[in-house]
Length: 343
Image (cartoon, rainbow, N blue to C red; front, side, top):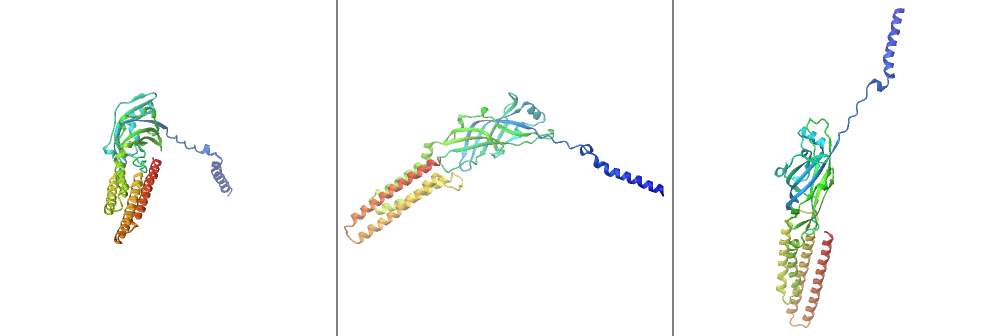
């Protein structure tokens, strides 16, 4: 009995040691802490663009074609590691607003270039780009911004165990735009290369050539409305001739506006040219209604026989039509001031 009691005491003492001793051991001694994972290194890639030619701009599609040279450079040791692993620096970036990539050209034009402490490479590119920053409110006089955007697109193979994080930097000093970059009806006013939303963007800003836009869009509208505004100078007795002109003017305006709108995409706002056409419709309609009223008044006087009131009526009609002509010219003046503010 005593032996059994002694055996029970030894057993309980062992169990107590098993339960208590682990709680007395500090966590640092019980198990080693997990190693903190080192963050992926950040590797800067410098971007430089040389634009040689800009052409085939489509105002309806908001697209344009560019050919030039893209230069990518990074620290020499990093570039050598990439090349040894079969990674071309070009695989780490992409043109964000490139459309129809299957119909574009992007190929190396030189071997590695020593650029101070960096290694770089030049690539010839030729592609079609989309610019969503174009605003046609001031059309045909507003400025035209065209963008070329590049963003990081790293796709490292498994041979690079710790893929770095890519940060794109704009190299404006090594960038430029050729004098051949002017487009039909537009001339290059400025360009800049800068960092943009995690990438690099080159903006080419064009201004319309004033005489080209004037002759193409405003001159036909101006001539048409001059004919309309001169029509009241016909004597009121030429009622049939005066009534025949406004319908012809309206049809001409419709066809001219349709031809101009076909060159633009569907827009949720009015352009400057839309405002001029809308006011021209209003002017033509007002004169047409006034011609009808004058013709009815004169015809009523004619049916009543010779009356002394006809000369006075004709003078009132002339004064009314002169006021309408002056009001129309003032309205066009206000619209031109508004158009200037939309530039």
